[in-house]
Length: 310
Image (cartoon, rainbow, N blue to C red):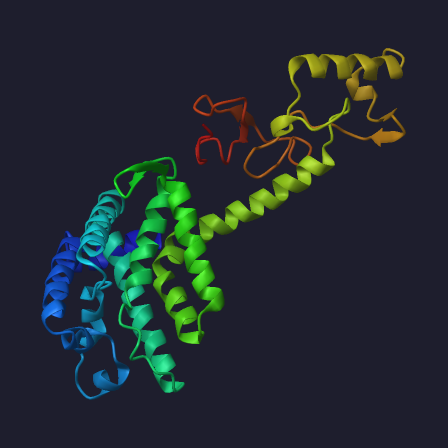
């Protein structure tokens, strides 16, 4: 993978425990901002000020917290510290640094674009908020079944929390002005690099699976789960097919009429992920996954590369 090659070249530049420094700095900025609110505006990304030499703003905006009440601010800082640590332990130091720094650079770029387009950016004081949300979406994508305590009280699976967070971001993207739309897209840059190809393949597989489910109708009514008949259904179908063909075997009876419909071939194996059957590729092998809760079958390309169904 290209990220692995990049890590071999630039891995020494990665900052271990990056979120520890960001959260610690954010806590200091929050306390200082309670004393003098102008500190926030000295740290936020301001393209006009950067062009005048205040280059620290290119990075220091990530230390500016939401500036809400102290309880919610401390709670959010703790959550993002925990999320960042979990991502770093999962990916490694370099890949987590890459995820976060790509978001920072993308935010800087879109704020410069908005500045040159003539937009007023003075009211965008929490410019790293969507970047922090993208970390949570990354964690929810990888550990969808992990239980999270909402407000330390309500247990919810991470995937539902992720959908809620995504819904809020989608709403703000729809109703927000152009700077907000671009800021959201920039903040999601790291997420799209890490998970975009996977999501694209999942969408394609879902569309293909839906088409196969519509086209491979069970000869005795309904649809067969996973594209595979149960043993009783298969025996009944073979018996009726042999009877219609006058005792000829399945190979001699390539088609038959059932209820006015002509069945030209029935697939007994179908991959739950990509929808491929033995009719598409006679040389493809299929296996059932013992870790999935149910009789889910996968092709040789996905038997070792799929999310287990529980």
